[in-house]
Amino acid sequence: MRSLSGEVIRLSEHRGSVIMLGFWARWCGDCRLAMQALESIDEKYQRAGLITLGINVGDSAEQTAIMTKSLGLRFPILLDTSSSAGKAFNLESMPLIVLLDRDGELRYSHQGFQSGDEVEFAAQLHKLLNE
View 1 (spheres, rainbow, N blue to C red):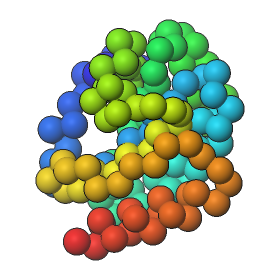
View 2 (view 1 turned 30 degrees about the horizontal axis):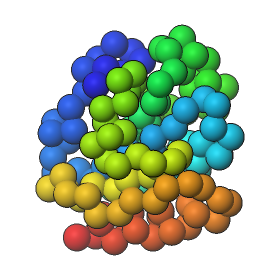
View 3 (view 1 turned 180 degrees about the horizontal axis):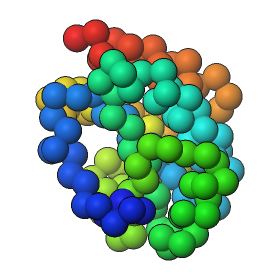
């Protein structure tokens, strides 16, 4: 997928790293809270080998850029304009948080977000980073 900066990013380029994906859309209030939680997790674990990618589903690049800036997100944001990545990860509701292990295998998936869910994300992530 193409990032907001125009770079093409492939998950296969990050083999060997633990990857956290956050699927979101600007109209989704819970997504905003989830993406801010992922930003905090990313800050804490990126030195340990975490790659965090936000995947915006369905919004224009301009809308996504405005929301990304307002949320203070610093990790790369990819544009899933055709919803193909969402379909590949069985996106049924947003936000969707996915953790992939160092071999690119899906190890954790969580749909929706409530305050406190980030504790579970971090615990699952910690396990993967220590494998």
